[in-house]
Image (cartoon, rainbow over all chains, first blue to last red; front, top):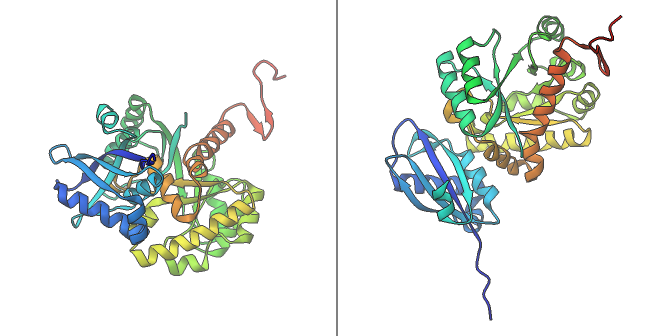
Length: 104
Length: 240
């Protein structure tokens, strides 16, 4: 019997902040951002996962559920700090594949 | 393709110099136009920068009158100098006067919860705004500056205000209201924030694109030389 695969969305993003952030800090901040806005239930539905983060350029790729892309965007827009310093996350590109996000 | 407009960039406290990176970021984020709230004229270097970036620079003024009389006096002086006129409604009397005045484009309400529970976009305000073609503005930065408890209360108020606006066909505009780069958000992120106040995706995108664009176009037409009255325009060569 065929199993329906969950569709996902990949978001290319950039962190703007007063200082540089580490991958772990960014991953924690994203999870906390979703949790703050949508709670545990929302976090389980949105399923944000930081795929990669370049500390040099402060850019990264994030994965979330295809259905809850808007909620993911709202959580990122609502974030005002990362690791205690003022910061914002700007979404650069959204796609269904990592390859397409990297190409843009 | 949608053309996004951030109708509210505030002058940074640090000075005009900070405006340059803000305008650059707005263009980078995909905005095709941005309004800078300023009492005076926008410096020429910034105007030429916007030209280089392909960003449509819109002049805007935020009025903060204490009385209804002061509002009408100020409107008389500024209406023809700015493309967008917004009124910060701090008292009920000012809010009522602003909502029924055709010269006002945008109604802003205070983010502070104690004040907002007294002065808000209620049904009467929506009825007046509908008649005068005023729009109701939501500033995303108001939400970002508050803590979770206050923010949840403000969201509840904004939700019912948007409900009032919908019932009376009052256009709703979403702007960043930011005075620093860190408070600026990309257009789709700003529209996504409206998920918190039960606004659908397409409706949210309209609030940051077509609604502000139509308002600016209508005002530019009114400020143009040929404009006589709504529906009446002086056509070149026909003037006798």
